[in-house]
Each structure stands twice: as structure tokens, then as C-alpha cells.
Image (cartoon, chains in turn green, blue):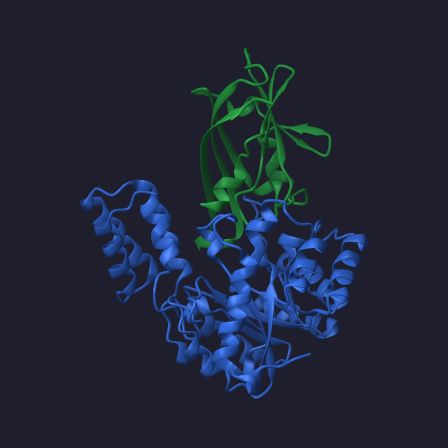
Length: 132
Length: 336
């Protein structure tokens, strides 16, 4: 599906100090506030990256996923990438292939599917990318 | 009396998400290809900072692009994001304050209609109506699959409208409500994801059966369990029951006097200018009975299952205009 294809581009993973930077795109047709980003389940080369070690870059700040529920007026514009910093002990070098498996979970704040329940869109992408 | 054709930038979702266009180059391409005159924009898709912090530069870019292409603003699509905070959903007053900048921006930019969605409660409607009246903008509640003009949620809105009794409250029919077949492109997508022909047949049968959409999906999913179908396409097929409605197209007549804008939802147009999944001939006949000119956005949603490289949204909208023109006839087409 096309929205899945957007999530992780072929050049989405860059080597960075102490790990990688991963650029993610929304799997939805419109922008959402960061308060609606419920989860990023990231597995690299079959190793699950702990949720608490991830940092997302928001206007120069480095925030953990647990910081996001408050951010209902910080917007992830639908054309922009969200950069996630991923610490890894022994990252692959630039030019090497990496197996990336990501599940992006976003709450769609206007699609109400039951009492006190909004739709949570979970998009799963698994692909090989070359580290940039 | 007549319909003014146009386009919503939502049709070009694939091209937009892929970053192939900026706001002004996208509108230029719509203008260059003659896909107006009407133009509709989803605030949360096209405008940075929407709804509270849209910059003057962004609005100038939008309006300059609309003007230089000779387009006519028709509708600014809004959303009522009541669950923006997981732990603290918006109450009526917060919902009103969330809708206010969306409606006021539409007024400032010259959009005559704000598309609203079924999530707006009668209490919120009552409080936003004066905001709309002051901005001289009509609120058009979208009637979209799985709802139709006579489903309970829409009936509740019709009753609220009757009570509030304002010319600023109306409807935006979306033809997803009254489809005659599941688009072939969607079935092909499900086949690619591993659904067997037996699964496809079960899906068609469940979709055509009477009953509530979620019940029909449940029947289909249970049958797929017995057939041993893979999980991925069965999960994805939930969309078939929410995106593609089976209401009667003649029911639109009941809300015609309250129609303020139209979503010409479509998925497919054949070379002979008919749509296999939606009976445009029948629908255009109903809307030819409007007693005034109403705008209609061509709204291609094939991007739900096709990539930008598989189909050009611009070409699809051009075909949709040709099909609607054919069924409406010159007398029922408005020009600017």
C-alpha cells in the first residue's frame, strides 16, 4: 500500500555517532501532532531497539517517546521526515546493508471507532536499506 | 440546476506525500491541466502550521497560486481532532475553539465552505454556527461511507440542523456512500497481498450482504479463518467495509436543498467514461435536480491502494471531469 511505502525511504538510515539516524514519514494523508505518535517499534538486523533508548528530534530538542503525549501543538507535517536517533553498540558502516523492521503507530484523532477509542493506525514496513 | 467541476488536492495525495510538489507547484499543475475551476484544500494536508499557526507567507502562496491559475476556492476541509490528547479528549468548548481558527481562516481566504465531519456533535454545531455566520462560511458536514443520508448519525445531524435552522449549516455528499462494486484495484491489491480467489468471493458476498458494516466484516473475517487466508489482507480488507458504502443513491434527494458542496469520490473510470464501482449516470441524474449551482470536487482515492508510479492522479481527475460532463450535459455544467 502506498502509505506504507512512504514510511521508510531507501536512504532513510544514516550512520551517526553511537548509532544511526533514521528518517520516518507518516503513513497517513495529513499532518498529525506529535501527541498522536504512540509508538515506534524498531528492529535492526533482528535486534529489537529498546523503546526508551529512542530519541526524536523536535525543533532541535531530543525527546523520548514518553515526552510526546503532551505535545498536542507540535506538528509532524505530512511532507516532512521525523528523525529518530537510534543508539547501537556496533553500527554498520556507511555503504553496508541493514535489515530494518519498523512498526509506526499513530492515533488518528478524528476517527472514533468505539467508546473512548480512536483508531490507532499501525503500519509495518520491513526492508533492506543501505546505510548512508 | 448546475454543477461547477473542480478538484481537491486530496486526489494528489501520492504525489504530495512523495514530495514531488510544493503547494504552489501542485496548484500550478492542476491549473495547467485545466482541472478546475473549483479547488478544495485539506487544511491539515496542505498548510503548514494548520490550524493555529499558518504563516502569512503560506496563505499568500496559496492564494497567489489559486489566483494566477484562474481557480475558484470551493471548500477548506477541516477535522475535529477530539482525541488529540490520548488521556484528555476535547469537550464541547475545546472542540469549538479547535474549529474556530479553521472556520475563520476559510473566511479570510475566501473559501465559501468548510467541510466538517460527522464527529461534530449537535452541541458543538450549535456553538460554531455563529462563528461560521460571522466568517460568512457555510459548514458542510460530509456524508461519507459507511454513512448515508438516512443512517442514524446523519439523521441526528439533520435533526440538529432543523433545530438550529441556519443557512450556514449544510451537507457535502460523498459518493463513497453509494457504491455498486468494490473497485477492481482494491481487489487486485488484496490478491497481491495473498488473498485467494475464494477469499475474494467471500469478500464480495459479505460486502453485498445486508447488515452493519462491522458485522459484515466480522462474517468475512470468520470465513477467512476457515479458509486459512493470510492475516495481512484480511486485516486490510476492513477498509472495504468502511470506505465503500452501499446506501441508495436516490436517498441524496432528501438532502439536496442542504447541499453546499459535493465530493465526487471515485476510484476508476473506464475508457468508455463510466465508473465500474460507482453509478455516476444515476448520481448525476439526481444532482441535476439541484435548483442552484453547487461546486463538486473530483476526489480520486485510488491512492489508498495504488502507488504514484502506478496511476497519475492528474490523469484520473481529467477522466472524471470528462465522465461527469458526459452525464450532466452542457446545460448542467457551470462555468466561472
